[in-house]
View 1 (cartoon, protein in one colour):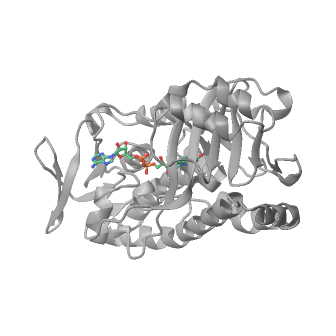
View 2 (view 1 turned 90 degrees about the vertical axis):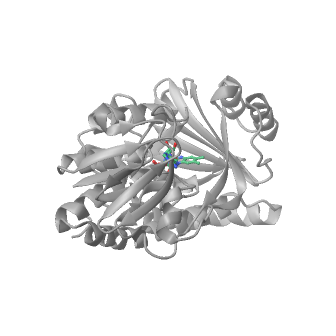
Length: 382
Ligand SMILES: Cc1cc2nc3c(=O)[nH]c(=O)nc-3n(C[C@H](O)[C@H](O)[C@H](O)COP(=O)(O)OP(=O)(O)OC[C@H]3O[C@@H](n4cnc5c(N)ncnc54)[C@H](O)[C@@H]3O)c2cc1C
């Protein structure tokens, strides 16, 4: 069986690895001129590190990261809103640089299977074959196609029959990675500080590097220059507790990324004929529980297991969608809820939030977030 994969990001490359390992011939088409990722960091929770362990790649990832042990959420007055252990699953929580994760995946895929500078422009099906058309190259034909082409997926438009853009959820997100020593106390703790309409998160990558993210409800959503992005951020977080202003100041402007928080809850099946979608193409998420990459890794493994179980493309794509839709819908809801509580802006809402959260957030975490981490993508049909 030959499968074409549109998109050479974390979803596309992990799918290529999982499918190759069950004997499927794959070809990955990436529109950029090389396989590359933005400089930001990515948190990988136990549900994702379990997939990396199954792929035999966890140890290599651990060379580029540090297992994290706790998550602490505080308000601007340093009142604790949540403090929870995150090191009790079989596989760890880690944070690493996205280019390093992509490079580890890339090294597992044979160079002959990757075609860069191939911008897919159309998908068509005829009988049991699917054709992938490109802007500047001849079309290629496969037994099936997987769209791993990100949040603005062209393959999704083919599958659903309409063009749907992710919906902006009302706040901007900045991300960066910086060389910086937080001291021993903080070197394996995720910290998030919640203010009014604004949050700042810090995730250690190793002893001397961290990944950070910032959100703001009032942030200008337009893309602006790297220098302006940094100035905007510094003005938004002036007066926030140390080390936040120091972290922003230490990050080179070109390493600061900015996006609008957006997601999409797809209605209807994730496949049409012999074409399916995975990763952000199927479920763009707001990053509030750090699950976008994690789900892309899960999707890849579950899809390969569905193909192995059924040996038949359409049945496998149907089984894959059935196994994934409920889980993904619950995560989209959880991320939206955490985003809206976290972005509370009025004084009254922030006051109520900060009074109530310490009492019920640990329970919400156990009931809504912990099950996300406990999911075992190595046994999706049991
Ligand atoms: C602010 C922010 C913070 C995040 N933090 C985390 C986190 O901590 N943990 C986590 O798990 N996730 C996180 N995510 C989510 C994560 O980045 C995505 O879910 C993940 O990158 C999805 O991978 P993907 O391969 O599906 O899509 P992408 O990474 O978008 O890759 C898609 C690829 O397809 C290519 N492509 C697109 N169109 C075409 C075409 N027509 N033809 C050929 N190629 C095409 C693109 O060039 C790209 O290389 C975050 C996201 C954001 C925005």
